[in-house]
Image: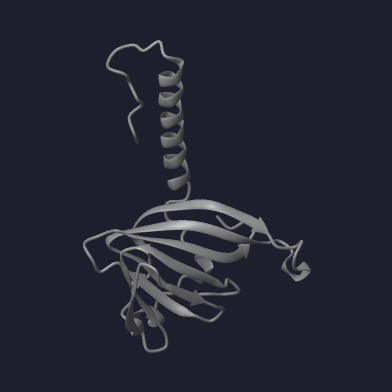
Length: 170
């Protein structure tokens, strides 16, 4: 957690005080939103294990996901009546070096992941051949996609993920 800003000497300047308060509030807000759901990367019901994971030589859980930050959501019922109870969700996900998102199957959760920084290796069924995505590239996911991700580099990966989920999904 960031340390609160403490001036070396007391300042009577309202501008300096406001700047210090703004930076402190901003830092607290960033930390709070980044850790709100540290491992809530995908719905638990989508996680795969057992023979599916063994066949893909895939991890069955998430590890090294250092931040999941909600950037907002938009209800979809006003535009698409069939999507009652669903929202378009926007998140930023950071995966540490060596980290991964375990094998899962998308179930009525279409989405797209756009890499902002780093290299991320995706293994997608049925063959699970590794495909490396770099900053500026995107991966599209639809119902039935079975895959997993791994950061196989020494640098963090940051991605923007947009998907359609039940409104109650963290």
